[in-house]
Image 1: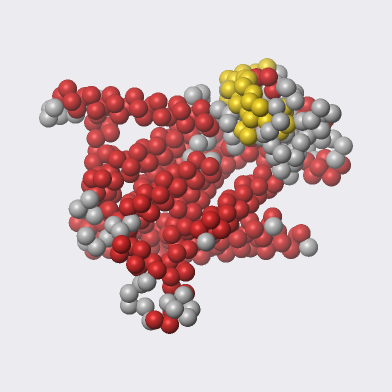
Image 2: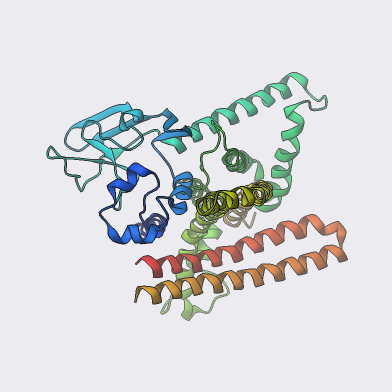
Length: 374
Length: 73
């Protein structure tokens, strides 16, 4: 039963993911891509305006990539190549830099970044005749999001090891510098989230976990709002990352669940007996609820952060939509568009805090539910 | 046929947004009232408000997922 349900969950995730990719009609963003898809008359008809497709551009900024693109000046792309690690089922392991793909426009060692189809954006393998193979190679590449996760982990390690040292050195003297920025937040998570929701008796065991997910989500949300390298990757708006975070909460909840928790799920007290044995309605609902809780955690963070990024990029794209019609309209709308984007950025800073808080407090409540009846 | 599915998904997303906005609005208004009556309980009220808003949002996300399923499956 659990395995089957997890498969169903995976299927839903796949559908969501595929939905996001398929939602925007495959049109061409840059001129050289336009030539490759120009044989499809229907697509041409849809794009209408000379090769400018805002949907594709916005999506390109939100999804993951094999190289870290920084800027394009004229026709030269400035981007940081990232290591690609592949395991081909026929030819074994491959390690090379993503710069060999030439921003997805050329193939290397019979691998290339797919430009269309269900694997759009991922590396696919070609056979000796140059035909794309059905089976994808196993992909362990350090993509943009993975690199951004590494960066945020380094940042967190530096910050927290640094303030831990300061506490050790300074003892009970008042906090100083970065210490005084983070101390109220840490105390807030410990006292208002962990102590209240997990329970007075054993909140200390779960505080490190709650603090870690809170600061990981918060720092990645905030880094995602800074458009310059090394920030700017949409880490918490990637459903794989939020799925990993939700899985941690799921596993911690299951492992720390006490006898009473499982009893309330499979043999709930104060429920009529015929709702347990002939028609096990309540146990089934409770059992499905175990999986729905982390699933909603995952979708909530992903949807909030992605939607924020998409709306911000949409407002900025207004400049190019209007500029495509008339240069002066572009200049005119840019004032409004930049103002709106600045406003939305401030709103997103608020959302970054709220989503990190909601994820943490819901995790704490789920853990507290599993630990109840002390 | 495809257009009917798209209209249905768009209407579904719109109704889900309406319902979620109504629910979260009710939570917000009653939280404001209770904070005004008992300002010393503001912290408790706020955290409970955020949790209930998050639960309503969860149901709304399910509706959106169903809309995605209508569109693409």
